[in-house]
Length: 250
Image (cartoon, rainbow, N blue to C red; front, top):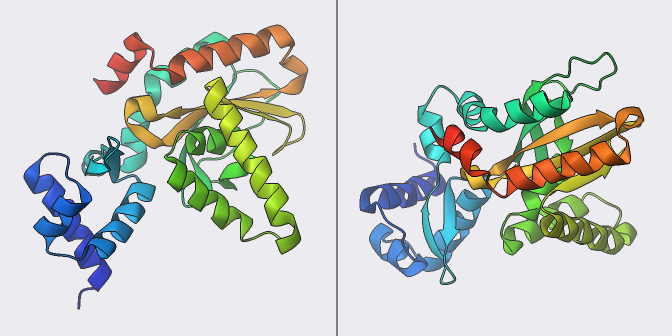
């Protein structure tokens, strides 16, 4: 027996695949023969999961690259291949731990870690998860998502907090995301692990809006000069370095 909502979700995906172009909400409702409110709810979920992207001010939709990656040799392996040129440059330049993460619901899951060769290190294991708002990696990804999607994620996180703390927490989260978006990268200083700072960017320029990379550095070897250099490097990569983006897309 099929599950109705899954049938409808796959119907929408199949319409987008069959037409091979961006479609508006009205066009998707017509092609799928589903009510507009139903299509709209399913589109929001598919967008949150990264399987479709919204384009243009009028709210057209198209399939994302995430579906293509599922047909390759595993989701994480395909993502790692796309991000590898960026990871390699950061690791070679700074010799610090580089993390590749994926947003899954309100959590960041670490998909791959390239360790520093230096003795003092903080290493998170692939498969580990953190709430997105507690990490630079999660903030960098969410800061570059559509405003509506950001608001839903913040609401979900705040729903787990005591009611008296929700308004203050929401304001703080929104401020952090706005700062990350303006700066071009997200920062975290000893908020998740004592003695460790992180700088992170979204991989939206690689058409992986639910993924990001971060560099973790022990505070005792993170002087101001190195901090400025790492932030500048991450900002450049986050804006889509042409040479590295070409390698990643190959």
